[in-house]
Length: 291
Image: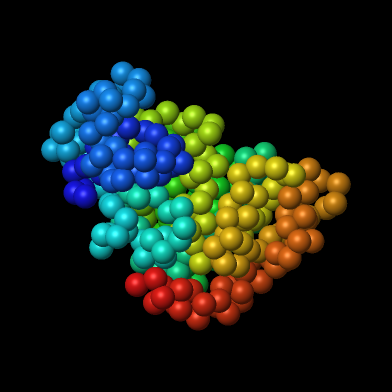
C-alpha cells in the first residue's frame, strides 16, 4: 500500500465502518481504490469522481490550505492513537499535534454559565500544569475549554466532525486561529470540503478519547457526544472524570450518572491540578508503551 492510494481513498469521505469494510472486501487499500475508481463498485458519481483524482492533485490541494496528510503508522501519527482498535487509518492535520500529556475536556453544547466557567478554568489549569487540551470545538463546554487553554498560553487539539477546512460552527474561526497561533492543531479524518453532517460527530469522538490520557466531562445531558467520548475512553482504558452537579439540573444528569457508574469526581480547578499531577506517570507510561 502507498500513501497515494490511501489519500485517494481518504478523499472519498466514507464512514470509518465503510472504509474498513471495503479494505477487508478488496483485501487492500489499492484494491478498494481500483474498485471505486473503475466503477466496478458503484458508490455514486461523487465518490467515484473523488477517487479518480491523483494523489499528486490531492497533496497539492492540502498544500493550498496549509494541511498535511498523516497515515497511521507514520512518524507523524500520534502513537497513543495508533495502538487503539478502530483508530482512523489517516488524519488531515493543520498545525502540529502536541507531543505532551493531553486531557480531553468535553461536555454539552447546552451548558450553564457555571459549567462554561468551570470548563474555561479547567482548560486554563491544564495549560498551567503542562497538559494540552483536546476537545471538539463545539459550542458550550468544548469552546470554553479551548478558550481557557489558549488564554493561558496552552496548546490544544481541536478535532473536527467535518473537513479540516470546514470550521463548525463558523463563528469559531477566530478561536481556531488562536489555537494554531498557540502551537496547537486542528485535525479530522474527513477530507477537505466535507460538511458537518450529524452522523460524523459520534465517530469523531473516538479520536478525542484516543488522543487523551484523561477525559473530563464537565456537564452533559442524559445522552450526547460527551457520554460517547467517555464510554470510548473506558473501552480504551483511559481514566474518566466528571464534575457533579445538582440532581435536578438537565446539564448534570450525564455527569452524575457517570460518577454513579464509576467515573472519578472532579470538584474544582484546584482538584483538577492535583489530579493531573498524580496522573502524569500514567500518561508517560502510556506514551512509552505506544512509542
